[in-house]
Amino acid sequence: MASKDRIQRLKDETRCNILEASLNIVKEDGWQALSMRKIADKIEYTAPIIYEYFANKDAILNELTRMGYIKLARLMTEARDLYEQPEQQLEAMWISYWNFAFAEKELYQVMYGVEVNCCALQGSCPDLAAPSDMLWDKIAEILPADKRSDENVDMKYYTFWSVVHGLISINMTRQLTNHDLSRQVLKDALTGIIASLKN
Amino acid sequence: MASKDRIQRLKDETRCNILEASLNIVKEDGWQALSMRKIADKIEYTAPIIYEYFANKDAILNELTRMGYIKLARLMTEARDLYEQPEQQLEAMWISYWNFAFAEKELYQVMYGVEVNCCALQGSCPDLAAPSDMLWDKIAEILPADKRSDENVDMKYYTFWSVVHGLISINMTRQLTNHDLSRQVLKDALTGIIASLKN
DNA sequence: TTAAATAATTTAACACTGTTAAGCAAAGGT
DNA sequence: ACCTTTGCTTAACAGTGTTAAATTATTTAA
Image 1 (cartoon, helix red, strand yellow):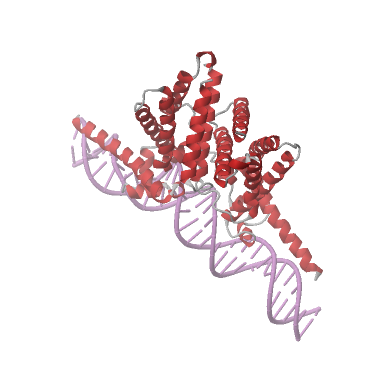
Image 2: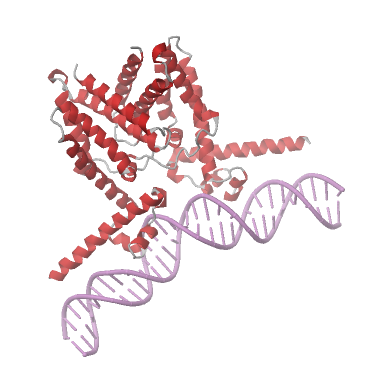
């Protein structure tokens, strides 16, 4: 009967190896490069074996997503517990969220649907710059003359863009489904940032 | 010699048809469903023909991206020109950006790397909710008692999340490469929102 | 110990994917 | 009429996720 345990332990280990191998492949060559056969190669099996442990490829992604959330929660808890005041704790948690995103880039990508391949075209044609230029120029126009440095305009521009794009992304990936609430957040944020331009 | 023109016109039309067919497929079944053979089917040719017009599949995505930016610039210009005051113009442009994202969801996705498939698992396990719960609770704790309604906490939570996730996304898709500037925007935004909690 | 049953693993296959090379058929020029 | 160019298709390659069948190894029973 103890052999059952041993076998179970080996199965658990293989399951773990599959997840580990997957993450390694992604860290080396990106999500695009992750394939069942490559995973099988890494764990020194053939592809169909993986289906004994996961229903399909998506199930592996889901499990990695879950692992990401668990790790993020741990890091945020640790960051929070370094402080006493709620305001400092809240800030520490968000900064910990930020740090996690870059320390575990691949996990963050699968958790929140940030594509990597997209937008490979960088400043290749003026069409791509037109919208951002329009916004940038208008921000510069509103900012008081003594604060109209390139860096200040950049700061405000990216603040706007972050909140708007972030809100859109969260909506599109269905992490926020209340569209009315979204619009309200948008309105509030926009008026808030616009107000902050003029002082 | 006029026949040359006619032929050129037909070629231009086919090129346009490829882009149109691609966008239709994506609108019907998502980016995942877009394949060279399906495009060929729609324009009633076989797949290799497409390579006469585009170097590869990526080139099609790039062209759709470009079309997206052109359309976005047009909409933003129209929105801006409805107003006189710079502040109103700026707000109108961002709202126009927001509206474009949902009116042309597929274009926005390819322009800014928002994955669709990801995070299909919704509230399936408590692990996924842990990080957001931690943040939500801390926001509730800081908010003055008379403003501690679920809706108010939600608003603030999503404001935080939008700006942080948006900034991360913009960084990861390499639309903003200056990491120091990012951190500064992050810090400013966080202290700004935290300050706004207590009044 | 040997035979039967069960489990573990692989090979083969299917229907896809992007992409390229070879072949064919129609049109144009001489 | 022939030759050349163009337009288009068929066939193929290497890869993908996934499933069914075949094979090998291990455990159980006699």
